Image (cartoon, rainbow over all chains, first blue to last red; front, side, top):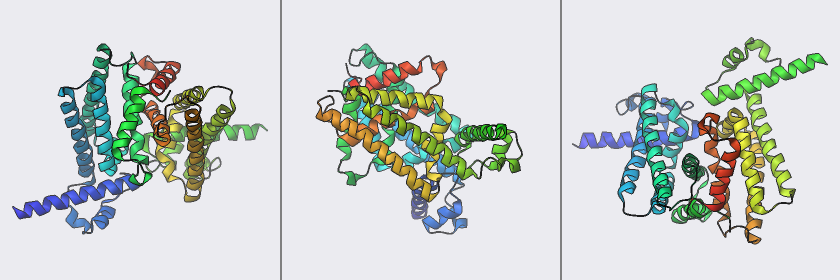
Length: 194
Length: 194
């Protein structure tokens, strides 16, 4: 079905350009007209591929949420130590942020513009993710692999420490993404103190 | 000069309500009309106290930037170890975020809406802050107090790890702000690994 294939890839292009635009101008500051211009098609023909700006935001948020979730499910059942599980998740976050900086930025900043119903669904996936991430920390403490830290504080310190990567990281800064993940992991696992 | 006093406090009230409003709706999504309603005065009389929405944003951003800067200047000259300096800065960040959650949120999210000229000034203060914070890490490494970490990665991991406090922390969660600062410091200084 070549027609369908073309339609899909135009849709992907729209979503990719939308991620760039929302990141730059914010969801509220971006119009479908701006987006059509970026994509290089008439505003009217954009609606053959996408219903609304809201639909684009939903697609970006849930696509990313599902990727995080899929990686977590895989990591949970891997036969590695608890610190290795956390390190694997940190490496995944770093890679996702670097490979999809625009989309990750939109999720971080613009999820609050989801419709009420979709926002509830999004928050529910996010809460589930945080609970399962926290459970790895908690089991690691029980197993004696982690210090007896406050689990919520550890959870959010780890997740939040990755936030800057989207804002700061450029390959030109002379740090590879592998080193970046390794160094962030090292700081969170072992601290900066000698 | 009682008239001046009243004017100042009305101005402060406007800025405080603006922080709440911008945090909730974003700078772009907030109108002077909404703000006047929150403050409980006529939109027209607001302009006796404040020139524009831009002026409010400037005041919020630079007020916060100067507080961070003042604390850093004090910490730099304190006669304590490098790890203690970083811990003092972490404690200050936590306290500032908890005591001024609305303003800190506005600075984090809306600084990019500053006018071009003010944005340059703001970024210059922020760069200066980051450089001086990095210098403490760098001197700490030289003194053997810190591991030989990549300084930029350590800097941004520390600063970014504090970001979630504004989004997550509520006194009702059973963690005092002193414990919060202490636990975040402990994770960054010594890591989570047993």
